[in-house]
Length: 196
Image (tube, rainbow, N blue to C red; front, side, top):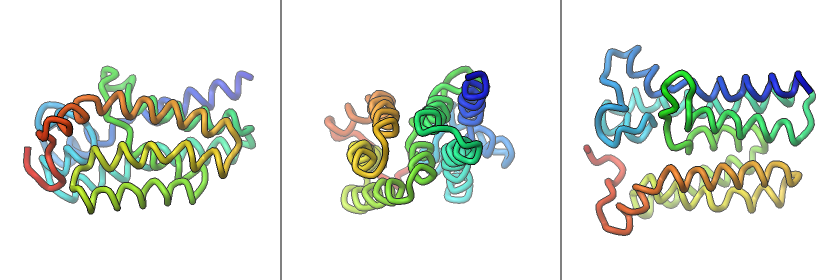
């Protein structure tokens, strides 16, 4: 049991590496937590610093979800531990121990978890996000709709442990997007590509 707990803890620590902060600091850019939406995520980095910094941030956030899940599988952990590692990495992104527990909203890291768990889960999430983003140009709305689809697809394709863990992640995604939801309802949400 000690090994399983250690693997889950390492997954959380991996998730706690704030890609947006690390990328912006390495590129000599301003801290995304101090401008725009104050969110250390790819969307805010895109608005503040452009496509290159945003792409690197997105890649880092996705990898934080991919690597712990693949590592747990490589170590031969059972489904409940693999699912817990995905949840731990996701939670680390939201509440990173290295950055004062002030993290992002979890969308890219959730995508990483899904891709590593089952390629079709990741593809469904990404496809839904892209479709909604293309239709409405709201990153937050695309993320919320794609998140809602996630547990359903997991329940069809995977053991229940994954659907349970991913349902928790979806709840947290909605919680972290509560200000975006208010802005969407009020018509004040920024569209993709708009400068804050």
